[in-house]
Image (cartoon, rainbow, N blue to C red; front, side):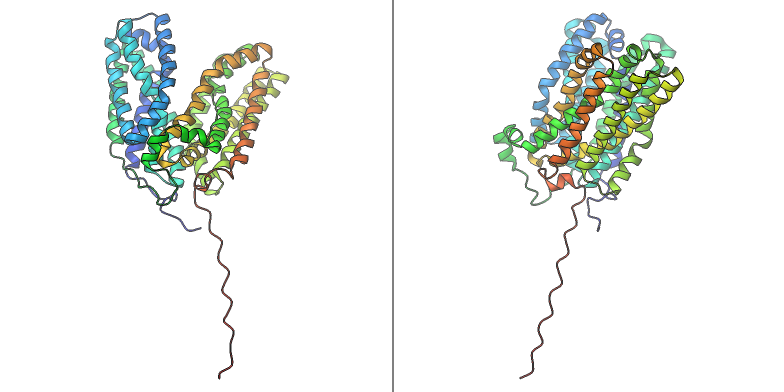
Length: 435
């Protein structure tokens, strides 16, 4: 098949700056996310109880702000919105060491939380704004790999800072985060958007402004795609929420296995994520089918947990089995994430892409909010029950993706436009006798 301008080899203008910015900002995120409660406790001097309460309230408020972020993307463009959010995050972390009172911390935390929760919408929209075709899949894979590598590096970096300066190092970490976000914003400012494809069937800007989110709510295939992603997103929450509880309560395994599982997941995502995604792209698989394959790999890993929880072998066998399960789970993540992300970006009409992706990203946020209470309630009944529910959810997501395939736009399903069938050769003109 002939390569188009949007083919795998096509580079995005400013792509290196975009990816470098993502990597640097991910280092900043890794410097505080693993220690979030302790981080803000030491930076502000407030009690852990107050810090936890403020983080919960501001996190919920940020969820309500996400639709407005989608509207801002449609009105001002993803690149501008991206730069604004980087600026807010840089300012917020620069101010945290001075927010020693409850009102000041709540104000800074609220504004920063709004930027943090909305950032995934804006970043996905930016990928859609600067890339086409398989370049979107490639950027999705590269972004995820850099995020994992950056967060791992950030966690190691802050560990070194704390070893040198003790808990007082959290203040330097806050300012380091601020500098990381500011530098990332400067790098992303070098990225250039591509023009819309003529005749792509996108709504006009005026029309988008008039109908707002009604356009999204009328798009049943996209809502179905969002619902399918919610089922898969529950599986994404399993490693961080369910896995540690399952190990300690049902398998009676040492807590150190949780750290080992996270390490394996992070190293694989950072090390082979781009390679796996590249193999999927070169296979020519439709995005719906590769995303469905990722969901099936999730289901296989969850079934493995059920088997392990039933047999409960010795510690050595448990360690080996858990390693295999985490590898299968991670492969599912690496196959699903780039295809699912590019599918959502490409299924969204360009003029209302921000609103569409705000709706889609809510599936991740809702799954993340629901997962702790759902998993703990199921785990209290039987340690295998949450894995059974996750298996059914993953299988349902795979089936939904396959059924949605013929209802979604062709440019979303196919990273490369399908080759047009060759026209039959014209029949030779009849030979007539000379007069």
